[in-house]
Image (cartoon, rainbow, N blue to C red; front, side, top):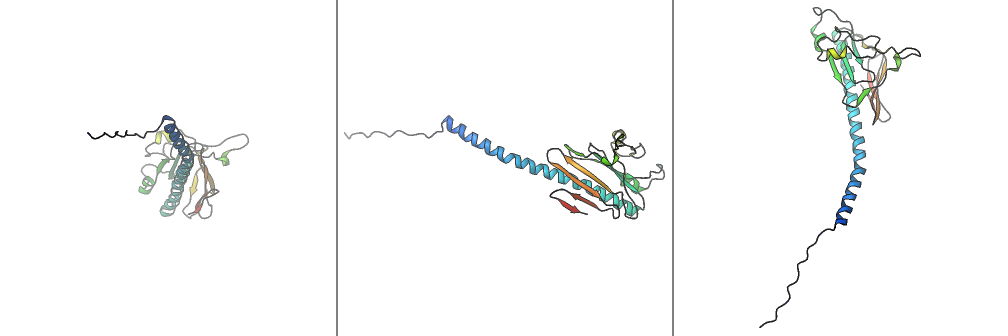
Length: 202
């Protein structure tokens, strides 16, 4: 009878609890280090996109004024997120043209973004924000007209048929990221967006 050889024991590789915890700790730390820049980048993108939308509406207001030989206005809610484009001199419902109706719009900034306070309307003794509130006639036909008449509004940013506009500076603010500045030029009605690292001109 042949001698039998011992059968080698099968070894099983496994991770110890300490090794698993160490690996998880490394993953968590690396994720935390990567997450903050990602959030910052996403916040920057949201702020730039929202400010670009505001800029586009301002530019569109200028175009409506030129095309329709009428004064149009842009208004925003200081400290809030609403903004509108409407004709400045409202006629009666019967006298409003198709462009008066189709060109009007009411929009809001994305959640977490607001417009900066309108410093030009603040004096030592009186804050005059909302000096020219929107009336029911101003916002007639807009989907959120009931809410709009109860808000405090900036002074109107006017765009005239000759291409000029009310010289204005306003801010779109994200408390976590910072702010971008929108400028409207008086003589040309041109709109620019500026910040420390962004300079675009219409």
